[in-house]
Amino acid sequence: MTDKQMTSLTIRRPDDWHLHLRDGAMLQAVLPETTRHFARAIIMPNLVPPVVTSADAVGYRDRINAALPDGAVFEPLMTLYLTEDTDPDDVAAAHAAGIATAVKLYPAGATTNSASGVRDFDKVRPVLDRMAEIGMPLCVHGEVTSSNIDIFDREAVFIDKILKPIRKKNPDLRVVMEHVTTEDAVDYVRDNHKNLAATITTHHLIINRNHILAGGIKPHYYCLPVAKREQHRIALVQAAISGDKRFFLGTDSAPHTDPAKLQTCGCAGIFSAPNTMSCLAEVFDVAGALKKLEAFTSLNGPNFYKLPANEQTLTLTKGDPVTYPAQIDTGDGPVTVFDPGFPLHWHVST
Ligand code: NCD
Ligand code: ZN
Image (cartoon, rainbow, N blue to C red):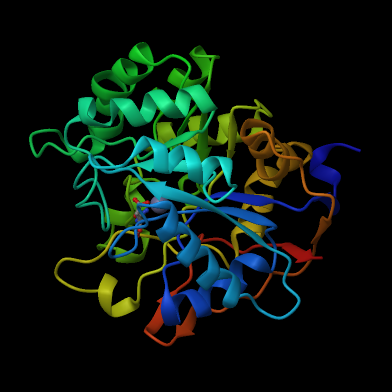
């Protein structure tokens, strides 16, 4: 059977290698949307204040576990927010104790809640050296932040100005370039085989910058890194469906309440947890690549993180359009769900 003729597909349960769960009432509301389909997720540390130390990570992990819906089997894989004051010993201890899976690098000011991020990359060199020694991955938000660099060029410039020097000085450091949005990033990952991988979000496989800006401004499609030209979206789809082990899913599902997004200076972030698997099945189906979906969502990530793939499975079945809520209610206010702009036909069952 060709991929196009398939109407049902069973894959190992997926993992989300880049997820924002927030805290408090928001955490409570959004967590079930992820645990319904995903077995594990790399949890972003950009709370206010951020999750910086191993003690912070233990506290946050406990709050996530306490918010799990009844019967959910889900493992939050915690990350530490890299600051210029991060203590290499604390990072190594957190890794050894299984408290933190990775460290997250935000260039200062790059995105939502990134004020404590790194300004001077030499200051974090001792932490990066130690991580290379112990094999702990660095998750990178790959955008420069200088106001003189055009927002659509910030990822490509980051690769040249920041990532290449970091990797040159520290070739043993294992790096995940997160939520890549450009052909430049895809090419960079493809051309560099050692210690480098990339996550791709669901929404960047579906939207380009016209979705945000043409025919009226659409705040619910605004996220960082911002979606680029169609040529870049196509490069991302090609990478995702290629089966190449270095590309895997990180949804970057990032809930903000509607009032926080719909204002003069609206927040960046797209909330895609509820319909991500149906969206991805649709993208892979249209590309005639359904048989590669499992590699992208369930195999390549564990392979890079040196973890076993999940034993449980998930079944996708093609049928009448899937229904999902336009918004979910949270104790903090309504959060709009990602609208792919086309009907979704793939129903998920566990
Ligand atoms: C994220 C958020 O809201 O925390 N926003 C986003 O647009 N992706 C931050 C991030 O990952 O950049
Ligand atoms: Zn993110």
